[in-house]
Length: 238
Image 1: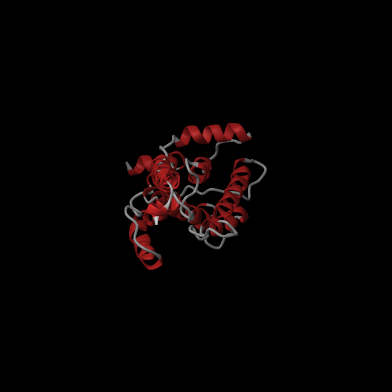
Image 2: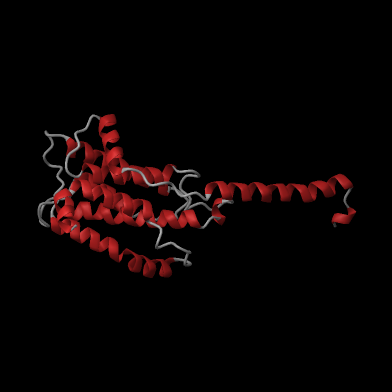
């Protein structure tokens, strides 16, 4: 078939697919980048200054979650786990990283809803955390509307609402209880995450390389923020 084409047609027949492959490979190389860690205390202070908040107990942890999700959605190449077009569909490392980050965000948000924000298990749940928790548990690979990114951004807005009330002295309904049992329960859940997510991931889809050992930015950041919001407990453990 190619032999029957003119010289120009043969050149186009070969050069266009080759160019597309080169462009695709270049984009894959550019997008295959994991964001760096960030200083949680400095970031919390910048967030408080930008929004006119007071930095109170729980502020660093909550602002770290918000920043982590912002990085997840707005890093180089955006959110990739639900992309179905090349070159994003061919990427492996970054979607694995996203899965690990999202796992830690889900765990800490649920811990805040169930434990950190409540004095007792019988206490009323915080309205903003009640909205954020299920939104973060939305299907991470859904590509058709309603879109995954939109749900995660709504969850960020709910966390911002909780953070605003938490930092306000006139809104006592928003609380963050920095108790040892709350910290221990969350750290235990974080430690058990690899096994739980491995079992879940095997059932849901193909196994991805590294997918359960890549929540580095979120776990590193969230543990760092716990050192700020639970300083006495962390010093005691050390």
